[in-house]
Amino acid sequence: MRYLKEARIIIIFFAISFSVNAKEYIVLDYGAKGDGSSIETKAIQKAINACSKTGGIVVFPAGKYLSGTIYLKSNVTIYLQKGATILGSTAMEDYPENQPDYTFYRKGKILRSLIYAEKCENIAIKGEGTIDGQGDKIVLANGKMASSYGERPHIIWMIQCKGINVEGIKLQNSAMWMQHYMACENLYIHDVEVYNHCNKNNDMIDINGCKDVIISDFRGDSDDDGITLKSTHAMPNENITITNCILSSHCNAIKCGTESNTGFKNIIISNIVIRPSKDREVIYGKPDGISGISLEVVDGAEMNGINISNIVMDGPAVPLFIRLGNRARGYDQNLPKPEIGSIENITITNITAFNTGPQGSSITGIPGHLVKNITLDNIRVFYKGGGNEDDAKNIIPEKEDGYPEATMFGVLPSYGMFIRHAENITLKNIEFYFQMDDRRPALYLDDIKNGKFLNIQADINSASTFIQGNNVRDIFINNPQPGDSCQSVIDIIGSKSKSIRLTDIDAQRFSEIFRVSSEAAENIIKTGNIF
Image (cartoon, rainbow, N blue to C red; front, side, top):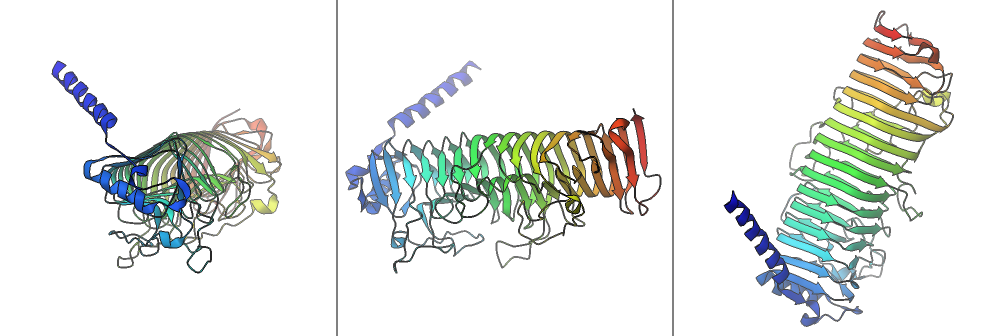
């Protein structure tokens, strides 16, 4: 045992020594000026090429370095000293097209990036400086602004790389997605700040089918989606931890999807603050955001093993959106059309949401394909409210092949949570409140099998029911607590409804314990401990 400890000490010593003694390549020594007006692409690339032969650090001293595409290579760290800024060129000809040797959706359409790396290992971008893409100023050779999806460059695009470290820097003003990591492994992003509000598709960060990822102490404000996990190729997202972040997005602050070909597995997201964007002008989305958390599978992926906890959000219209659909868009036209995917084993706990919109949250599958094993625990949401009796009667279309967006169904027939086509659903220790009186129930359950609804407290209009159930089976409701008296614990419709148990019911809070429509089977409800 003593020898093992000594060996570990030796390994750590050599690792520290290597880091301290890594050879430095200062870009000024390779012809860069740092004056902010000269194109420095060749000088920067010359320093990177030299560094790649030995491994080491390419150092940017304080100054402004105007550059087109630079190609990061294995065993190279880009280090921006305090006061150093890499400025993206505003001329499109400084961003050559790159065709990765890898099949993915939009291959041949996404082509450009300020910093590009493919099949590299042991690479890093670190320091105390800034990378500014100047994404709202890039012009084509004919003088027109770059606008199409494919021609606008990312700031960082890495494909099939291993051992990536992005740390300490500030990233701003990308013409496209800010960071795009595709089919990468061992990715570590720490203490990075992002501001991205200058163009369309201004995502904060896109993790696209990557493995073994840690994102921590991250701060971001973006017009489009925030921290986004997606899969547009053969590799799934797996073994991912996201923690200790402060996020603002005009769209979806935390998102798995929309592009969802090959899956999401073993993902932990925790300790996140979601707050309104500082930028009130919107290119796409809403000033305070569309959703806080969106989990989406619409292109055949499997989503399995997602744990989300300790989230405080202020402003997004929809706190939670879980959607299994069937858009069935493949990443390779030579492959068969994707089959319907799956969502299961999702746990979401300790969530507080303020100033949300009127439409409500939702968890939805599609007929014959249920979302499964979803647990929500210790959640408190303050909704805007304002729904009327007609809203409570809204019939929500399936939209099986629709683009998955948290607002896709419009105003839902429940103000708190709408759940449809789901199995083994547990909601416990949930609190729903509304700012304006609302005539909708707190929960609407449609085609639910095996549901537990425990200790739910909610504001309810006295003329409304606590829960609306349509074709619900094997449902257990315990200790529902309306803020004031209301009509019933549950109104039940649908000929397939059966096996519903109610217990620990304070009868003084309800005009009737339950109401059953004529189409529902008789004797489908059992009650206990009515007091």
